[in-house]
Image (tube, rainbow, N blue to C red):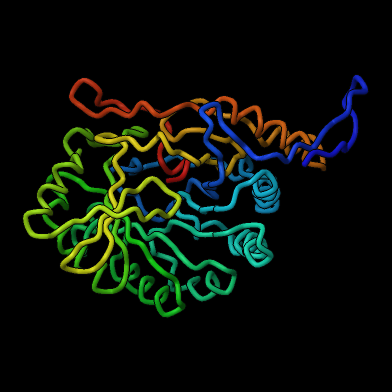
Length: 349
């Protein structure tokens, strides 16, 4: 649907184009991930440097502006929005945005609103998240050992995360645990994590570490191919491939012994780009068309240039024409620098 909303300087009509977003490879973009903050109350060793420099608050979009951009994407065919960070629940007044987007779920414009969290704030927000229309969340959890948890997160409190998971399940939220598979750290624990998750009715997804941002460690020392992890798991579990999808990049199996689902996200050993339906918006209004590429579009300027959304729609459309076929992630001894300089917390997971 297009409508003329005004004119530009030369008198030409300014058209608000709300037609669906189709990228150069024929993929419909229906999934928006929004990093509402680059800040986090953890400092996970594979994700952040210990002493991070965060964006000044003046550079961030307001929550009202984030809602306006999300609404533009919904008008153009986005049906799933995931709020990410950093840690999204540390953003001041974040529930304003959750409530506003939740209204779009209630009226049918948006099929799903969800978020990825480290779980530290869930005991405080779980009930309100459910009340706002959130039904499913991802919780990042790499180990069940409190000491190792503190070591990998630097600042994290394992007991608070467990309290948060309890509160979320009590509130009715369905949880999927996300674990980054790290060689010589948690590879031997994945069976225990799997049994823990499935024993509580939660899915588990394991993720290969991604070469994003400068951190203190060499990622080649931590890189664990999930092909190897799967082979190891098959020594004690029966893994049956299933067509289950959640809209993200995970490939799922059913574990016969637990009757639960296990997902694999493999950006390195088997990249998932051919079916990519996602774009990522940062808290400053920068749109990344691919997690593993530096090409981006500035939506903040368009947003603030006019009170109507025609310029925003036009900026989105131009950006989608530049969505690449896939990323360039590689981790080996000759590629041990980050594929992109920005940290995952800037773009959102």
